[in-house]
Image (cartoon, rainbow, N blue to C red; front, side):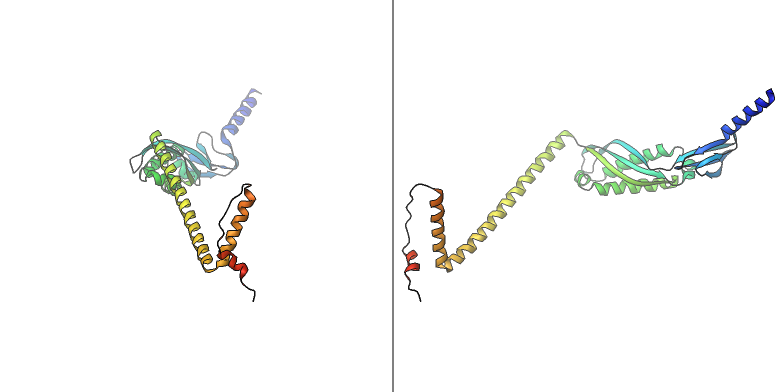
Length: 247
């Protein structure tokens, strides 16, 4: 009876050490005595206990924060830049056999690449052309991690920490730019108004009646807006329009 119990316990232990549950988003890389044997698909899988070694590899998209990096830009400005990296393992066997720790290796290559790319551009380009910087960083990291079976899908620069004096200088520059645009808009408005007035004066100079009607319209507006008595000299030629005989 005791022997049966021991056999049952041994069988349960064997099943426990030989069975693996692999999730739908995982793949199992099997090594037998250190030699690659293949991959296990999702589901309940069995291996030879104490002989086979199974490593689960997550194939979902992994977001990884790139910590702030001290960078000196091309125009010698010290800044701190951090970013976020999105990647996934497309070949689990390479991720296990090609590098010791693919997560740590990807993090290290991401940090060095971010420092290198941002150090090659000027601050204005880093601020205004962030998409170009993102694509360059993504392309370089993707090339380096391809032998590890990793595909980099996206890199986004999150924050650019500027020195306080640089922030004040940029604020003054932005204010000066706004003032310049306001003066240009005002000058353009005055120029357009002058063109319209010149055109109106040209028309009135050719048509005497229009000038007289404008004079009467001005008198009407002043009389409606003011209660005091205002005397205006009336040009004699204003009456000529009414004294001409009808044809």
